[in-house]
Amino acid sequence: MPAAAATPDHAIWKLAAIGTLAGIFSGLFGVGGGTIIVPLLIFWFAYGERLATGTSLAAIVLIGLLGAIAQGGIYGNVHFRTGVLLAIPAIGGVLLGTAIQQRIPQRAVSYLFAALLVAIAVELILS
Amino acid sequence: MDELAAVLICVFGGLAGGLVGVGGGVLFVPALTIFIGLNQVEAESTSLLMIVLVAIVGAYRQNGYGNVRVREALIIGALSPLGVWIGVTVANHVSERALQLSFAALALFMAAQLVRRANRLPTS
Image (cartoon, rainbow over all chains, first blue to last red; front, side):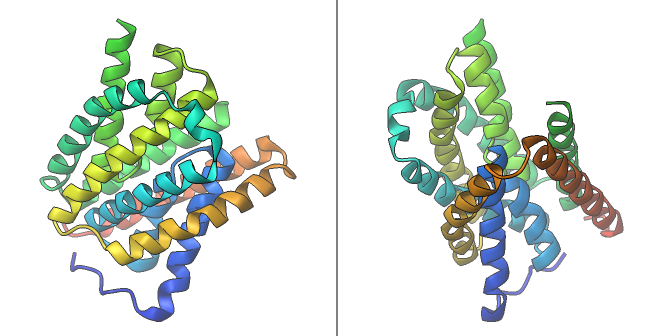
């Protein structure tokens, strides 16, 4: 799939809508914004799966930082040592995941994402 | 043993982040509550720290592969707190069950759209 064109200025409201929707779903369900960001970048901007997931991760860096700041007293609840120690295997996972993703067809990423969405839906229905 | 289970689940959380571009919190939070024994608020807060660390490394790698639009990511991220505020306000006025079922329906709809679209892609 050809790379999506650079976002024209008149489409910035769509990006703003994606950011707002991602925030709404985080606020409502505590699910990360990625669940919303990746499909909408694919549907609304014709991003390929790799571009959508990479851009989503970059947005999540900012969303996570702003979330921590917005929640103010959150630092009192963060177990820093546990978080940093468990982030080490998680970072190993993300390095492996991004490397695998470059070597599988983009459509496989869509199928994996669809499976994740179905799992989330089942969890929401059963909870 | 519990710590080992938490470590394994966190590897999978990171793997999901790299493969499909989510933060991994959907796995980090249960790992922290079930196997480390944190309460829900502590787990969500600690998960946020982990998500930021994982997303920094993941986005850095994806940027190296040419898969990040930085300006677009910044706009999306910058608008998210407005959405969180709207979401929390809505959650206080609508039944939680109705919200859960609505989002489940939306997730299933998006899953179907992704599969339909992917089925039409040329194999590459």
